[in-house]
Every structure is written in structure tokens, then in C-alpha cells.
Image (cartoon, rainbow, N blue to C red; front, side, top):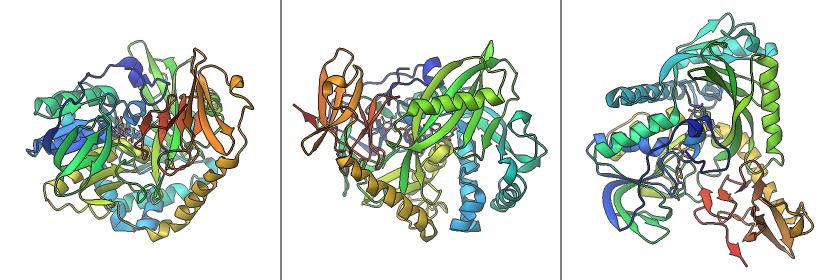
Length: 505
Ligand SMILES: Cc1cc2nc3c(=O)[nH]c(=O)nc-3n(C[C@H](O)[C@H](O)[C@H](O)COP(=O)(O)OP(=O)(O)OC[C@H]3O[C@@H](n4cnc5c(N)ncnc54)[C@H](O)[C@@H]3O)c2cc1C
Ligand code: FES
């Protein structure tokens, strides 16, 4: 599959092609319109169709072309912000509900795979959380006790099966899982169309209207009229402010390294370093690929993403001497809610018939799956005890310090308006790259394509006017305030911005 939200290629894109769908050509109607054909949109569509709703899914790229194609696909019910932190912030009962829903998410994935015979390399396996040597007793026990109270299946293991990651006790989580993301989502899309669901791709939604009838309007002014709309665009494009001040966008980096077959015990591994690492294997016929991710930083706030890949290669070669060569390297984006729980339910700014699903963190796969259960219940008028926990309106007072810290971080990004440019003259910009230039008071995003032709745009993000940054790894313009991203030639990739960068002469 061709990369869509940046130029790097993930292992999933390199090994599988998703089915192709056509774009929307005329006005239409349905019960539920879902904007976004990633794992969140497709999972919700599946359960809504099962409940008898007429469903349309619309995406401005291919199916799964967003962050879903960039995942590492650990399928886990273990919250990556630590259970003791979730308990401290939200209380024991909420931590218990979080586990219940995460576990239901994994089970739903397995059920969908079985019901539809989807061949996607799904496998149940153990996960291991490895603490730093200095925190291995106190923090490990604190997390173990909190996991037990929350109902997570957990053991203290004497060491992870791959001891070079830490030859001392760690937490073991049975019954986690992994799969090939694009094989799974292709099977899911086929199951959706087999049930009568309609999928339209290459169709950008530019306007969403709430009311007695909800309307999703495309860039070409075609209308999809629905009783309800789910915004499954990863960062919700129907919300202007309410959610984007409660979560932050982070870039995260992954390498796929060839290793000899069966040289590393097959499991999921995570560490507690800062920045942390997440590790799994992808089994191939002749060899395995060791997938190592980490090196996260806030979107649009790092000048040297290539350094992140170098750090991952160094970290990997120090711990995995059998590592041969890097076959894949890619990056992607996750949204980190300040209080550690995702946002699923009515859009706070459009509360009649618009629903959102966001705040994926590093567990967006299980989050998308329990979101499907919750949203299907809500739209079908069924009670669901998880609704309050994930309510997008919630204010978590104990998350106030994080809220203030992140708010300050966003505010200082506006200083970029007066930051001097990297190049004195457009002629200095190398072909195939971009840079933000100053022309008088105005900041201009200048992209020089491979043929040397200059493309100029306003560097102000259409969302709330932060200055975008050039992402040297993905060849995109990334907004450091709330994570909107744009192709080199200005087309919006993901929200909260709905419009492209403004083209200048
Ligand atoms: C490197 C990386 C590693 C990760 N590892 C894990 C992991 O191990 N385990 C885990 O559980 N999670 C992981 N995640 C997170 C998980 O992969 C994501 O949370 C999940 O795939 C997001 O799915 P989604 O459907 O919400 O969003 P997406 O897949 O991004 O789908 C959103 C879709 O909306 C479309 N769209 C956006 N705006 C519009 C518009 N205006 N009109 C029409 N369409 C629009 C996009 O084209 C896109 O296809 C990882 C993420 C990354 C980046
Ligand atoms: S994403 Fe909010 S200002 Fe750019």
C-alpha cells in the first residue's frame, strides 16, 4: 500500500495492499455516517451494521491510510499510563471499568476475526512490562497491586523471556495479542460491504452540521444526510476547541529490523524508560522482523527526526546483537489525553447527533474496538456503564497540572511567529524540502519540489493560526499546537484543521 499520511512506509504497507473503493459522486442518506475509515470508523461501522443500521463510511484517502497503517499493532488491555496513575486520578472503580472495556476490545477483535475468517496473523501472547533497574521493586509492586485491583490479569515474572531487556523481575500480562493491521482492516472492510455498508474513499469532508438531521458535506459540496454522524478522524474535525485543549499530539518512531528466525522469544515487550520503547516481532517465512518503537516527542516540536531513528537503531543494536539490518523505518502520530483515558461519546460542541472517538494514546487498537461497542450502544439507545468514564465533556480536576503545562507549551508555540527563518533566501532551500520563510511580517511555508518549482502557502495553520513546521522525515507541514498536518503541497492530512494551507502566489 502506498504511504498516505507522510512519506515513510510501515511494515504493514510494505507487505499488503488494502482493497480499493470509489469516491462519493452524489448526495445520499443513511442512518449513521462515519467519517474516517481507520480502525475506529470501521469497527464502529461493523457493530452498527450488525444492529441493523444503514451505514456509510467516508474517508479522504484509502481505507486504513491514516495512523492505522502506521501502528505497531500490540493489542493490549494494559493502559500505558500505568494503573496506579489512572487510579490516583480517577479512582478504583474507573480503573476497573477501563480494564473491563479494554479487555472487551480485545475480545471483540478476536470475535470479528473468527466470525469472518479473517486471515491476519492474529495471535494471543504474553506482554512484559520492564521497569528501570532503580525502580524495579517499588514501582513494580505499586503497579502490580493497582493492576490486581483493576481486574487486570497479571503476574510477577522472575525476568522477561528475552533477558537482555532486564534480567530481573518484571510484570507479565497473559492473553495480550498481535496481528497484521492492514490484513485485519481489509477483512473488516469486506465484512462491512458484505453486510450492505457503503464505503467511499478519496472523499474529504469539509463541513459537519449538527441538528435534527446531521449533515456531512464534502469538499465538492455533496451532502450525506444522516440521523447520526461519528467523527472517527483520529483527531476530531467537528470539534474546534473543547477536546484539543485536553489532549496533545505526539510523533512516535519505529524501526523494523531483520533478525534470524526464532532468535527472540515471541512476546510483546514495553519498558518504562523516558522516552519509553515498545517491541514486538513480525514472523516471516525465512526470518523475523523485530519492530522497535519509541522516541516520542510533541508534534512539530523537533528539528531533527532522523536523530530519533538513529537513537532507536543504537538502542536496538545494544540489546539485540543478532539484529541484521533495518528494513523499515516509519513514524506516526498518537493523541495523548492529559488524564490518561480516551474520549468517546457525544461531541461537546455538537451534542445533538455528532459523536467522536479520540484520545487513542498508544492503545488505539483496543480503544477503537471498545469505542465501537460504546458508540453502537449509545446510537441504539442502550445504557452502557462505560459512557460516563469516556464522556468527552468530562473535566478531570486531578489532571489540572498537566492541563496547565500543556496549555503553556501550546501558548509558547505562537512565538514561532517571530522566530527567524532557517534560510535567508528561497534559493537556499534544497529541492524536495520545505522551510518556513519570513516575508515582512508574514510567515510563508515554502516547498521546493524535486523539479525545483516553488510552492508557497500561508504558514498559519487554518485551525488556530499557529505556525506550521516542516517535518523532514515525512515531508509534511506539522502544526506544533494541536497536531494538524498537511502534505508538502498544502493539502490537509489530519485535523483538527479541516481546510488546506492557504495557497499564496
Ligand atoms: C507508530 C505508532 C504505533 C502505534 N502502536 C500501537 C500499538 O502497538 N497498539 C495500539 O493499540 N495502538 C497503537 N497505535 C495507535 C493506533 O494505531 C491508532 O490509535 C489507531 O490506528 C488510530 O485509528 P483511527 O481510526 O482512530 O485513526 P486513523 O487510522 O488515523 O483513521 C482516521 C481516518 O480519518 C480520515 N480523515 C481525516 N480527516 C478526514 C476528513 N476531513 N474527511 C474524510 N476523512 C478524513 C483519514 O484519512 C484516516 O483514514 C500506534 C500508533 C502509531 C502512530
Ligand atoms: S492544530 Fe490547532 S493551531 Fe494548528
